[in-house]
Amino acid sequence: MLSAEANDLCEADKKKTITPGHILRAMEKLGLERYQKDVQEDFAKHKEDEKLHTKGKHGGWSSMKASGVTDEELLRQCVGLILASWFSCVSLVWSSVVGRG
Image 1 (cartoon, rainbow, N blue to C red):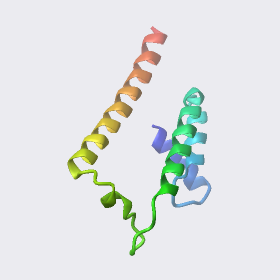
Image 2 (tube, one colour; image 1 turned 135 degrees about the horizontal axis):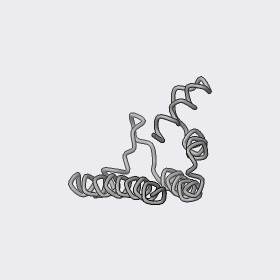
Image 3 (cartoon, rainbow, N blue to C red; image 1 turned 120 degrees about the vertical axis):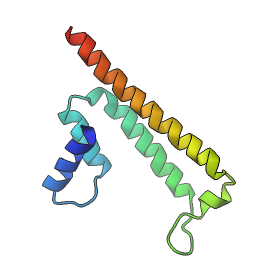
Image 4 (cartoon, rainbow, N blue to C red; image 1 turned 90 degrees about the vertical axis):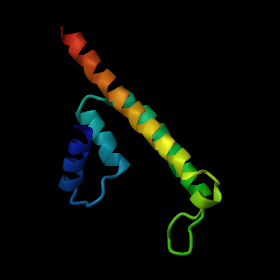
């Protein structure tokens, strides 16, 4: 739902890439303002982390290999983030359904 709304806003702006601004506006439009601060903080942390990395020879990030993190650990972290996000969405939907009842 959020990604679809952000995509609609992106298209309305005649842009090809969804930006953090599109996400924040979509959250507002969907009544998710209470989560905007967390999203903004996470985005700021991501941008700061991104500054610490150096560009590789072909434009890709070379620091991933240099970090020493295994592919298995990266996969574990990704799955953890996906599950945390999914549970957060389910909790939000559940609380809105229970709140109506």
